[in-house]
Length: 265
Image (cartoon, rainbow, N blue to C red):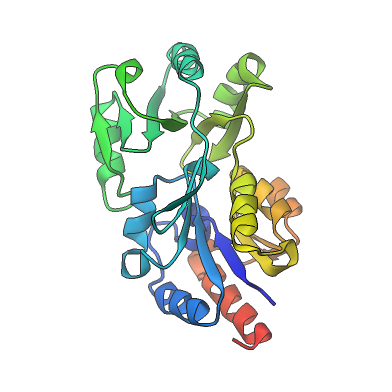
């Protein structure tokens, strides 16, 4: 019997315009009534996720910041902030790379020193609570994630530049929208999902996960039943047990409905 469904957002549940199929709200209500929990697992900020699920905002679990901050209601299930000295070191090294912009995600807000980026992240597609500051080093907050937007290609450029400097000390993962995310070495969506499973007594075989990017692979491994989107890279598709349609075909919603039918929900 399935007891927990976790899904990535961008490129997975959301379509290419960043929109959500509102049918998911009724599905979540039905799942809850049948004792099945729903988790939004994303590199996004907690507030951004809550806005996407506003009609059922208090009825789901949030695995935010690529697993760095996981909450259910008022309960913090998993919190893993970066050490301040490591934050400063990442800022120093990323400042050396041209055609990039940075933002940091904390418990209170997200932060950037690029006004144009702040405006982009405030728009309804992302819905971030983000402050524009003069110097990211002066931010007083617990920082869960540093995101780097590479205007060229994060996989072929920034990841190759920074991996030798931080490998073994920082978890670097490719996320949506040409983003390279920096988290604590042991932080990822899979670890966060395992903490949720332990907190609520859910077994691996009772868990389903959906995703489309490299930051979803650990979540695939934590879940007994995993689904990659057809729009995912070939490597990511190969790490999931199943491959479904694209995010523009409402494939997550359709697959959850099929699972519910299979489970008699």
